[in-house]
Amino acid sequence: MGDLLLSIVMLGGIALMGGGVMVFRSGDRRRALLMVVAALIMFANVAIWLVPVK
Image 1 (spheres, rainbow, N blue to C red):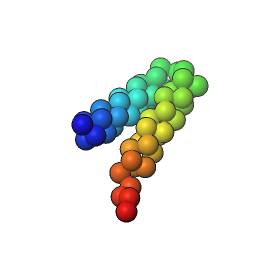
Image 2: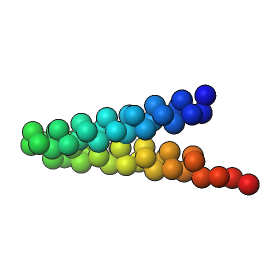
Image 3: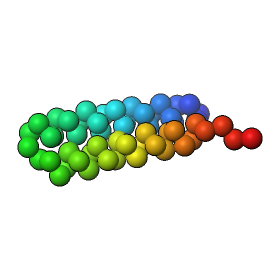
């Protein structure tokens, strides 16, 4: 179950990053920046979840 959740979060982050690039190209820089920041936060959350715990 946890692997599925991490995979969904990673796919969502990739989709946000791609959407941010597309929105940036259309000219809405503020919305694009917010989408990229949200994607980076999702990637950071996955990295934190994957840190091994003793």
